[in-house]
Length: 468
Ligand SMILES: *Cc1c(COP(=O)(O)O)cnc(C)c1O
Image (cartoon, rainbow, N blue to C red):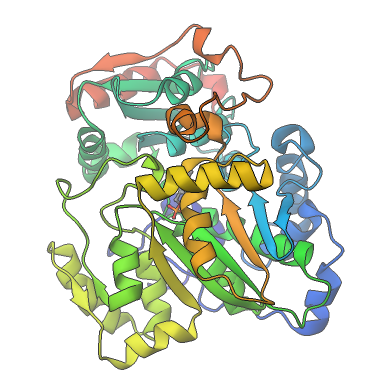
């Protein structure tokens, strides 16, 4: 596609042919620049990194947006993403102290402010339509609540989310947030989003947009904490570190890949999956074979229960040396429900040059890891982080610091925590009475037309002063 500005990409998402967008080149950070970034605090570092990608936002405006987003009030500490050392050479990068207690807040909180800023500038409005089975939906709602020019319509499967996740979303009383509980499963919700998005006339007339994990701005925002963590555990830029990343849609670890491509001295990017091991299979064997819905398993690290990894296409683009035709060829079979196998090809040997290694975890290993981590370090981790720790430890090398990314807090997955350690996970202050708050949601059958009618009704009855 012809190049677009950052703001255009932020609002439109996909390329016209349905492909994902990616910067034309990755900015290169030289040694002296890297050295000068070392002492910066989180917002200052974020300004340096994000101004390289967000090219059409004036520096002063971007600075204001970033300092408004990354505050100790929203993220629980001055460090925003603090590093906790478990033992010498082994660290936890704590990414889950934002408003919904999962790492997605780090990107989503910035996205909320970016959307509001750009919509105000364009005198435009946006109706975000999404489907969620947990973390993404609540993270999006907390990022967009009270924002001018934005409404959120979030579909979730009625009665299928955990009590904590349900109350987190349904207790929001903001008038621009609409929870729609669909009498069906997550796939029914996703199908409705697709059906509405495929109605181009409706989409255009009602300014429908999404905030799903293929949004480039979300990846960009996540690059920052790889740099921050690197500086936290090293003394000089001669040192290399490895990161272990609990992975689902390949968004988080792809941000690590970009950091590495920019010149951050990363040795290994260790990809951890749960029982849904489509990505582990690729990095072990060269075969990328997306699963069907029936093959996708419900696990105790549910935010990693994916059948295909939506951001993976971006990595393969880099792997082919940015050969769009080759990528298109490979995805032709993927889009038809097939697979591709790179084993034995030149591309397969190249995956090693990008620093990727992988492994898969499973329920018993997850529970054992939570228990061992608690017994050994007195630190309680959630089920997703446990998968990252488990796989990360298998690839740990002497003299290479290992940084394991924490992607959610244990309180969100109380049942597994009880199974592992025999007591309730602690509840951060402000969340203790969540499940007793009044709830606000619409219940609907799985019918795209009813969802459309609901959107129309809300848009047409809205207070015109809500639009910037
Ligand atoms: C979304 C999520 C993941 C997976 O992240 P990707 O960017 O999709 O790879 C892992 N853990 C938790 C808790 C999540 O919410």
